[in-house]
Length: 189
Ligand SMILES: Cc1cc2nc3c(=O)[nH]c(=O)nc-3n(C[C@H](O)[C@H](O)[C@H](O)COP(=O)(O)O)c2cc1C
Image 1: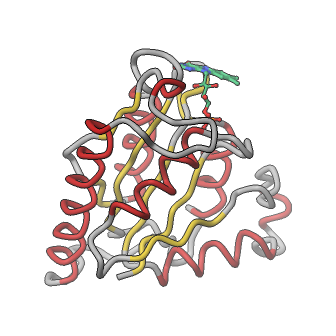
Image 2 (image 1 turned 180 degrees about the vertical axis):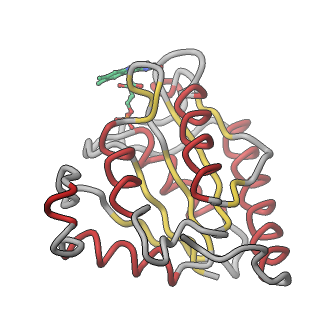
Protein backbone atom coordinates (compact mmCIF):
# COMPACT_ATOMS: atom_id res chain seq x y z
CA UNK A 1 0.00 0.00 0.00
CA UNK A 2 1.71 3.18 -1.21
CA UNK A 3 0.91 6.50 0.46
CA UNK A 4 2.24 9.62 -1.23
CA UNK A 5 3.28 12.37 1.20
CA UNK A 6 3.03 15.99 0.09
CA UNK A 7 4.22 18.87 2.24
CA UNK A 8 3.20 22.51 1.87
CA UNK A 9 6.53 23.75 3.23
CA UNK A 10 9.72 23.78 1.18
CA UNK A 11 12.03 24.48 4.14
CA UNK A 12 14.78 21.91 4.62
CA UNK A 13 14.13 21.99 8.39
CA UNK A 14 10.33 22.00 8.01
CA UNK A 15 8.44 20.59 10.98
CA UNK A 16 5.75 19.46 8.57
CA UNK A 17 8.20 17.48 6.48
CA UNK A 18 9.62 16.07 9.73
CA UNK A 19 6.07 15.04 10.71
CA UNK A 20 5.66 13.30 7.34
CA UNK A 21 8.88 11.39 7.89
CA UNK A 22 7.72 10.38 11.35
CA UNK A 23 4.42 9.14 9.90
CA UNK A 24 6.36 7.04 7.40
CA UNK A 25 8.13 5.31 10.27
CA UNK A 26 5.00 4.88 12.38
CA UNK A 27 2.82 3.34 9.65
CA UNK A 28 1.63 -0.27 9.69
CA UNK A 29 4.26 -2.50 8.07
CA UNK A 30 2.26 -3.08 4.88
CA UNK A 31 2.13 0.65 4.12
CA UNK A 32 4.96 2.64 2.56
CA UNK A 33 5.27 6.41 2.50
CA UNK A 34 6.87 8.03 -0.53
CA UNK A 35 7.46 11.75 -0.09
CA UNK A 36 7.35 14.00 -3.15
CA UNK A 37 8.23 17.68 -3.30
CA UNK A 38 6.21 20.62 -4.60
CA UNK A 39 9.40 22.58 -5.25
CA UNK A 40 9.25 22.35 -9.04
CA UNK A 41 5.56 23.17 -9.46
CA UNK A 42 5.34 26.53 -11.28
CA UNK A 43 2.87 29.27 -10.39
CA UNK A 44 -0.51 28.42 -11.86
CA UNK A 45 -1.21 30.10 -15.18
CA UNK A 46 -4.24 29.18 -17.26
CA UNK A 47 -2.48 30.28 -20.44
CA UNK A 48 0.30 27.75 -19.78
CA UNK A 49 -2.30 25.09 -19.01
CA UNK A 50 -3.95 25.78 -22.37
CA UNK A 51 -0.87 24.15 -23.98
CA UNK A 52 -0.83 21.26 -21.52
CA UNK A 53 0.35 20.45 -18.00
CA UNK A 54 4.00 21.44 -17.34
CA UNK A 55 6.18 18.32 -16.89
CA UNK A 56 6.49 18.54 -13.05
CA UNK A 57 2.71 18.86 -12.75
CA UNK A 58 2.04 15.98 -15.14
CA UNK A 59 4.49 13.80 -13.22
CA UNK A 60 2.90 14.62 -9.88
CA UNK A 61 -0.62 14.02 -11.20
CA UNK A 62 0.45 10.56 -12.37
CA UNK A 63 2.08 9.81 -9.04
CA UNK A 64 -1.05 10.83 -7.16
CA UNK A 65 -3.21 8.74 -9.48
CA UNK A 66 -1.03 5.67 -8.85
CA UNK A 67 -0.86 6.08 -5.05
CA UNK A 68 -3.27 4.14 -2.85
CA UNK A 69 -3.61 7.16 -0.59
CA UNK A 70 -2.26 10.61 0.17
CA UNK A 71 -0.88 12.19 3.30
CA UNK A 72 -0.77 15.98 3.34
CA UNK A 73 1.44 17.86 5.78
CA UNK A 74 0.11 21.38 5.84
CA UNK A 75 1.83 24.34 7.45
CA UNK A 76 -0.45 27.24 8.38
CA UNK A 77 0.31 30.55 6.68
CA UNK A 78 -1.93 33.45 7.65
CA UNK A 79 -4.70 31.16 8.89
CA UNK A 80 -4.77 29.04 5.74
CA UNK A 81 -2.73 26.45 3.87
CA UNK A 82 0.50 27.67 2.28
CA UNK A 83 0.46 29.17 -1.18
CA UNK A 84 2.82 26.38 -2.26
CA UNK A 85 0.25 23.73 -1.39
CA UNK A 86 -2.77 25.61 -2.73
CA UNK A 87 -0.95 26.35 -5.98
CA UNK A 88 -0.09 22.67 -6.44
CA UNK A 89 -3.70 21.65 -5.72
CA UNK A 90 -4.92 24.19 -8.29
CA UNK A 91 -2.72 22.66 -10.99
CA UNK A 92 -3.45 19.06 -10.10
CA UNK A 93 -7.18 19.67 -9.90
CA UNK A 94 -7.69 20.59 -13.53
CA UNK A 95 -9.56 18.13 -15.77
CA UNK A 96 -9.47 15.62 -17.29
CA UNK A 97 -9.32 12.86 -14.67
CA UNK A 98 -8.24 15.02 -11.76
CA UNK A 99 -6.55 12.52 -9.43
CA UNK A 100 -7.88 13.78 -6.08
CA UNK A 101 -11.27 12.36 -7.05
CA UNK A 102 -12.19 9.55 -4.64
CA UNK A 103 -8.60 9.34 -3.36
CA UNK A 104 -8.33 8.36 0.31
CA UNK A 105 -6.25 10.94 2.15
CA UNK A 106 -5.29 12.20 5.58
CA UNK A 107 -3.92 15.50 6.86
CA UNK A 108 -1.36 16.36 9.48
CA UNK A 109 -0.18 19.82 10.39
CA UNK A 110 2.55 21.27 12.56
CA UNK A 111 3.11 24.82 13.68
CA UNK A 112 5.07 26.64 16.31
CA UNK A 113 1.81 28.16 17.57
CA UNK A 114 -0.45 26.40 20.05
CA UNK A 115 -3.17 25.62 17.49
CA UNK A 116 -0.83 23.50 15.41
CA UNK A 117 -2.00 24.67 12.00
CA UNK A 118 -5.55 23.41 12.44
CA UNK A 119 -6.99 26.33 10.45
CA UNK A 120 -4.91 25.28 7.43
CA UNK A 121 -6.37 21.77 7.75
CA UNK A 122 -9.91 23.11 7.54
CA UNK A 123 -9.16 25.11 4.40
CA UNK A 124 -7.50 22.09 2.83
CA UNK A 125 -10.51 19.94 3.70
CA UNK A 126 -12.77 22.54 2.08
CA UNK A 127 -10.84 22.38 -1.21
CA UNK A 128 -11.04 18.59 -1.09
CA UNK A 129 -14.84 18.76 -0.71
CA UNK A 130 -14.99 20.36 -4.14
CA UNK A 131 -12.51 17.88 -5.59
CA UNK A 132 -14.21 14.87 -3.98
CA UNK A 133 -11.07 13.84 -2.14
CA UNK A 134 -11.93 11.36 0.60
CA UNK A 135 -10.35 12.97 3.65
CA UNK A 136 -10.14 10.85 6.79
CA UNK A 137 -12.14 12.58 9.54
CA UNK A 138 -10.29 11.31 12.57
CA UNK A 139 -8.08 11.03 14.42
CA UNK A 140 -6.84 14.53 13.63
CA UNK A 141 -3.10 15.09 13.96
CA UNK A 142 -2.47 18.69 15.00
CA UNK A 143 1.06 19.35 16.25
CA UNK A 144 1.19 22.59 18.21
CA UNK A 145 4.41 24.08 19.59
CA UNK A 146 6.30 21.89 17.17
CA UNK A 147 9.63 23.31 18.32
CA UNK A 148 9.15 21.34 21.56
CA UNK A 149 8.13 18.07 19.88
CA UNK A 150 10.96 17.52 17.42
CA UNK A 151 14.65 17.41 18.24
CA UNK A 152 17.25 19.43 16.32
CA UNK A 153 17.65 16.60 13.79
CA UNK A 154 13.90 16.60 13.03
CA UNK A 155 13.05 13.44 14.97
CA UNK A 156 9.62 13.39 16.57
CA UNK A 157 10.35 12.91 20.27
CA UNK A 158 6.93 13.61 21.81
CA UNK A 159 5.28 10.33 22.85
CA UNK A 160 1.68 11.58 22.72
CA UNK A 161 2.19 12.90 19.18
CA UNK A 162 3.84 9.67 18.08
CA UNK A 163 0.86 7.73 19.45
CA UNK A 164 -1.77 9.84 17.67
CA UNK A 165 0.17 9.44 14.41
CA UNK A 166 0.24 5.65 14.92
CA UNK A 167 -3.53 5.77 15.36
CA UNK A 168 -4.08 8.01 12.35
CA UNK A 169 -1.96 5.81 10.10
CA UNK A 170 -3.91 2.72 11.19
CA UNK A 171 -7.14 4.60 10.49
CA UNK A 172 -5.85 5.70 7.05
CA UNK A 173 -5.02 2.08 6.23
CA UNK A 174 -8.57 1.02 7.14
CA UNK A 175 -9.99 3.97 5.17
CA UNK A 176 -8.00 3.00 2.04
CA UNK A 177 -9.18 -0.61 2.27
CA UNK A 178 -12.78 0.48 2.83
CA UNK A 179 -12.79 2.77 -0.20
CA UNK A 180 -11.08 0.18 -2.41
CA UNK A 181 -13.97 -2.19 -1.65
CA UNK A 182 -16.64 0.08 -3.17
CA UNK A 183 -17.08 1.43 -6.69
CA UNK A 184 -16.79 5.24 -7.09
CA UNK A 185 -20.20 6.90 -6.79
CA UNK A 186 -19.52 9.51 -9.48
CA UNK A 187 -16.97 9.99 -12.24
CA UNK A 188 -14.00 12.36 -11.93
CA UNK A 189 -14.25 15.81 -13.49
C1 LIG B 1 4.04 33.58 5.82
C2 LIG B 1 3.86 32.87 7.12
C3 LIG B 1 2.65 32.91 7.75
C4 LIG B 1 2.43 32.21 8.94
N1 LIG B 1 1.18 32.20 9.50
C5 LIG B 1 0.94 31.38 10.55
C6 LIG B 1 -0.39 31.20 11.03
O1 LIG B 1 -1.36 31.77 10.54
N2 LIG B 1 -0.58 30.34 12.05
C7 LIG B 1 0.46 29.65 12.64
O2 LIG B 1 0.23 28.86 13.56
N3 LIG B 1 1.73 29.81 12.19
C8 LIG B 1 1.98 30.65 11.17
N4 LIG B 1 3.26 30.77 10.68
C9 LIG B 1 4.34 30.05 11.35
C10 LIG B 1 4.50 28.68 10.72
O3 LIG B 1 3.45 27.85 11.10
C11 LIG B 1 5.82 28.10 11.21
O4 LIG B 1 6.83 28.90 10.67
C12 LIG B 1 5.97 26.65 10.81
O5 LIG B 1 7.15 26.18 11.38
C13 LIG B 1 6.01 26.53 9.30
O6 LIG B 1 6.00 25.17 8.95
P1 LIG B 1 7.34 24.38 8.56
O7 LIG B 1 8.16 24.25 9.83
O8 LIG B 1 6.83 23.06 8.08
O9 LIG B 1 8.07 25.17 7.52
C14 LIG B 1 3.49 31.50 9.51
C15 LIG B 1 4.75 31.48 8.88
C16 LIG B 1 4.92 32.15 7.71
C17 LIG B 1 6.26 32.07 7.00
